[in-house]
Image (cartoon, rainbow, N blue to C red; front, side, top):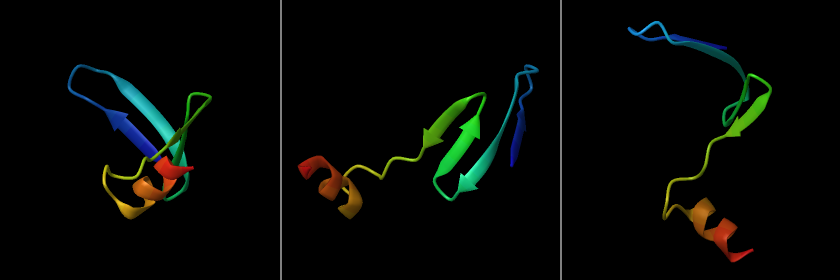
Length: 46
């Protein structure tokens, strides 16, 4: 779980369902591999 609140008063929260996936406000956000990483290279070939 993540709860975020910055100094302007903006707030957000979400739930991590695994190490690379965050559910937030009805959206599913997935971490992308870093550019040039092995998993990034494999993904671009398919």
